[in-house]
Amino acid sequence: MRRLQRGDTIVIASHNPGKIREIDDLLRPYGVAPVSAGDLGISEPEETEATFAGNAQLKALHCARAGGRPALADDSGLEVQALEGAPGIYSARWAGPGKDFSSAMARVEREMAARNGHRMANFTAALCLAWPDGETHVFEGKVYGQLVWPPRGGEGFGYDPMFLPDGEALTFGEMEPLKKHAISHRARAFKLFVAACLEAG
Ligand code: IMP
Image 1 (tube, rainbow, N blue to C red):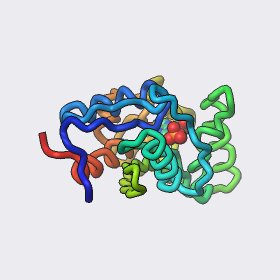
Image 2: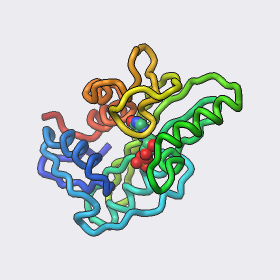
Image 3: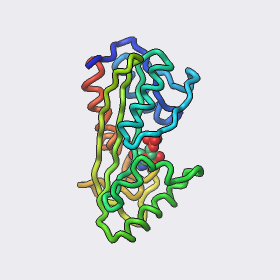
Image 4: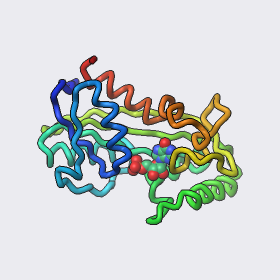
């Protein structure tokens, strides 16, 4: 697998400043400099694939080709077992244009109760490194848990307040961000990416 070298720049296929900062922190110790797709004037492609991995790959390839250098993209969401994996790749869309996650969480609760199903769920994050010649590598991380109701805590974002990771007493919404970042689906995907694609500091 081709690795990134110290001094390389890499396009981050996101227009979300929070995500870009998080990836910047991760890459800096390895001497790799991130530049955002937005700064290069690269548009966001439509997410038309049916899986997290497919969408991460589509976004990373688009940016690698448009930017002429390696690119990193991620895609993530909540999968509820009783809902056959929904909202899944539609996790952000369930919150609507106003990004209303209180109503997205209420919808998850309502649909889960209607199925009389159990409350098992997981978050998944797929991270893709793509090269301008079309080579891609995808790394996937998951964290499993139960959904609680009512939601608890004001930390994190999205569905965090209703997600209680296995073996923990606090939801992601109640947890210190540093603790969440150590055990999250994203952390697990990043760890695999670092081991496979970055040169040890
Ligand atoms: P993305 O930005 O296309 O990857 O969309 C991810 C969506 O999945 C977010 O808008 C959230 O709804 C949900 N999601 C992903 N990761 C998390 C998490 O760590 N906590 C809470 N919600 C998450």
